[in-house]
Length: 288
Image (cartoon, rainbow, N blue to C red; front, side, top):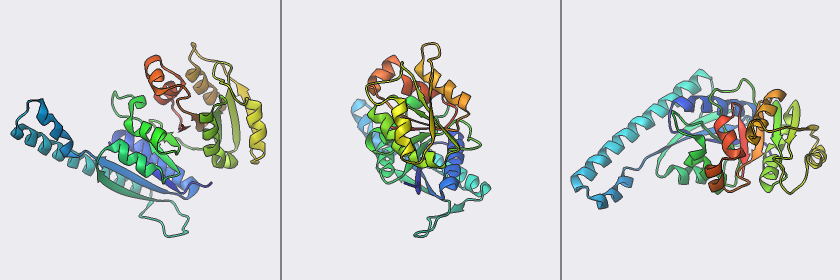
């Protein structure tokens, strides 16, 4: 299935530019529409603090400050979007029915980001999530996990710097799980257009399920010529081994399943998904 609509949740301007550049690059590949969505904090969310010993006047002051900060951030994100899209000479607005040209639009809504982003993602072919700003960890992103667990759609983590190309050389992180099978299905349209496809497997990564050679045969039915390579962990980190293998291949896109183990286990003990989320320097498309 061709990609026609991208969702791009924007919370800030620093990481937002790289994510927007990545989203617009994908839109040009597929002649798709990018919906940049900014979710404003609802000042009424501070009301429950009234039960923590704060006076009504203090609550009102907090709500006013929250609203002021929310408006300021929303304006900064909108300005960044408008200036960046103009610099890229991308047409702004919704495409006409059956029109196949890259376009972009901006929307600002108020509410809980994880709820609204997940809902919008259900009718998007792909959601592009920026890397977090500052010292935040992408593995703790509420928007990312909302899309992964509550949308049923793939999510792509944009790198810190926009890639020069995307989707020409593709790696598939394969371990035989249902999550990796979902990632393959989402990546098939990309692989059918790619110059080269490599399947990355490892005994340390494989779970119960089809092997890499079985995936090669399956992809051939979709007219995709793929090769399979076995990688090794780096310093006992499977995720590091995956990233090194993708780098050696010159990949500009990797697709893989997310959280084959529980998210809680990965947050506590670490895991492949968490390592990739925090260390990848190329676009990575995840499915859950």
